[in-house]
Length: 159
Length: 154
Image (tube, rainbow over all chains, first blue to last red; front, side):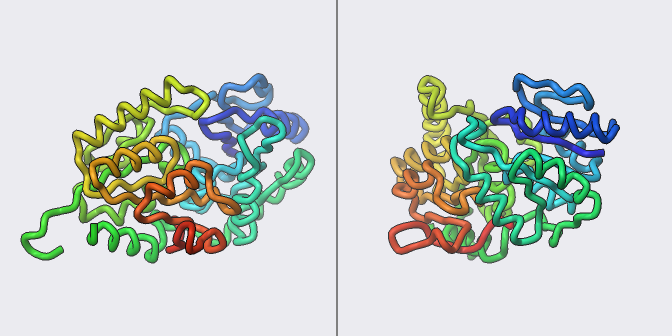
């Protein structure tokens, strides 16, 4: 099962169109999408606009791979489960988000070997196969680095 | 904590999605405190293990009425809770929480999202002025006039 998610803030039709075409071409019926409230509804896989946090977590756990926007919430959730994830960063010039910060996020996580990144629709379709063999360089624990936790604890103690 | 010392009260605030995920990853640092959480989605209550939990409406800066309502709700929560420390991972609810926290002399912490790898978020640049501890998760963005780097949520 491939879990497709665009987060809860804005739809991301560009991602859904590419994956719908990919599912048709490859004859895949094992995708599920959380797609927001956009204008495009996929014909080749089931989808819901939104999921509750519990439903989201269940979909993540049941999936073999995740394809999403480059949101840190989704990326971190995937890494905590050790799931391979392929992201397409949102573009500000297409009105998909307010600025291009998702490209920077994607670059940094990609350099660390955590995720796969597609920077265009063509690259997304091409990298779908890589998801099958990709394994993230690290399986994240469930909390922040000890350095950060200690800094915050010390600040609170001194407050 | 030494004997006789009271637990610090902390208000931990974030909006939804990645901001909440990041707040949950620093939550272990709040385990010794008497902490209450504020966010924008009722269902996140499942993540806080029965601790005090408040919901405010979500708002972007384009919807002024929603922003005003969110700010008012945060003000009421802060006056009710009277925290020693306000800590936030952003975005809009965190900004108001820091400003109102200052009014009641709380110490304030802004942790800028790991999503802001090349420049600080707009809310972060503004909120930094109201933060006693202003943190970035990227060493390149730290500086004497700006935030401190002390590790990341990863």
